Length: 391
Ligand SMILES: Cc1cc2nc3c(=O)[nH]c(=O)nc-3n(C[C@H](O)[C@H](O)[C@H](O)COP(=O)(O)OP(=O)(O)OC[C@H]3O[C@@H](n4cnc5c(N)ncnc54)[C@H](O)[C@@H]3O)c2cc1C
Image (cartoon, rainbow, N blue to C red; front, side, top):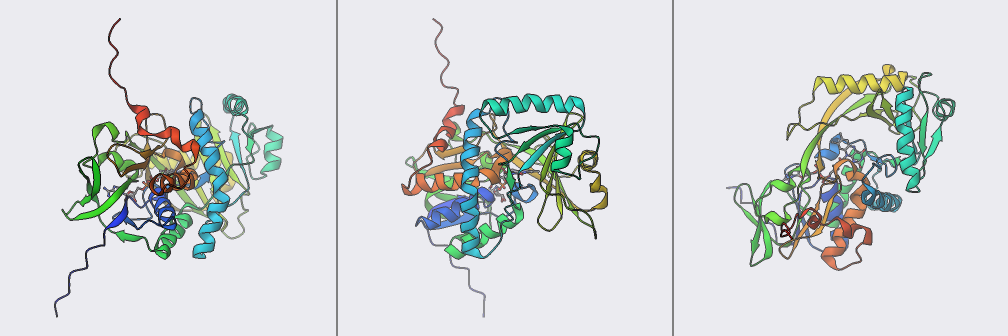
């Protein structure tokens, strides 16, 4: 008997383009709010989030000139405990949320001086950041090298296990009845200034009255988006390493971020004793190759801070593409034709920002309350507008 064609998917209220951490969290929240939701992604649950470290770091990631993003990040961090609890309640799956805080450690006096500048900025914003002498740093984390120059503690910066979160979100979406289409979207379809669905790369169309663009670094490449609302997203390449503890290897107690002779790195311990070491940051277009230099530099910097790294086994080096915008903040909210919603550009904070992004998008689509802090991140902030006439 011939194999029948698979039935065409039923029309969805909402089509989410991209099933990375942002798309999956958003689909889950939209479905819970009553929408019929379809996620289109050839490889859901991967994307940049597969390479990520899962740090929830509103303070450690606070940078000069990014004050609005800091407010968003703090609001997102506050949502994580209930988001993680709900995810685990619904799926029975862990998220690896560890609330053990983070350290930022300078390898030499010049690194320490740079950390002092960052600390002054963080404190000027009222962020929870404490200065640590070298002795205080080593008593907070005894595995630090005796040579470290001190640094800072961020008691409110925590972590999840990114891959556990992706698996739990996938399961939560499945459990709620979100449907998945394993394909790539070529184009968002628009008629009479209203979204009607998407066209897949093979030419098939899917109908939907709302399309959420959550395709990470690829969000700006989708066809059909009007130029004035096309998110200005580009990929910033990053590598993380995964290391397994040997028998008897002492366990690191918390996230250690480092500045090592001017270079940033971090070492993130998991509940099973393994480590994630990250991360390089390079403009390499859409390449996901792993440069040998990145592996070398990350290992060298991690063992400068934490000599115990030598006792671990290197099991993986993975590259991912951080979806990045000109101001390093995400692009959120309705834009252009009726039914188009943007949820992209989360750069180095996609895990941290996912719960807040998901609630905001669910609000915009279903009419539920939208967190106020999310409203400042529309794509309109990048519009240059007409050149004013000369006086
Ligand atoms: C090395 C590294 C370390 C990081 N560490 C952290 C961290 O510690 N904490 C943190 O909060 N964040 C971290 N991040 C950032 C975080 O991973 C990203 O911000 C986040 O993954 C962005 O999520 P996303 O769903 O928007 O994009 P992605 O995770 O990239 O997912 C996009 C999805 O869209 C799909 N897609 C693409 N094109 C199409 C198309 N045409 N049609 C359908 N689907 C499509 C892809 O297959 C993919 O699954 C890190 C990132 C990297 C690379």
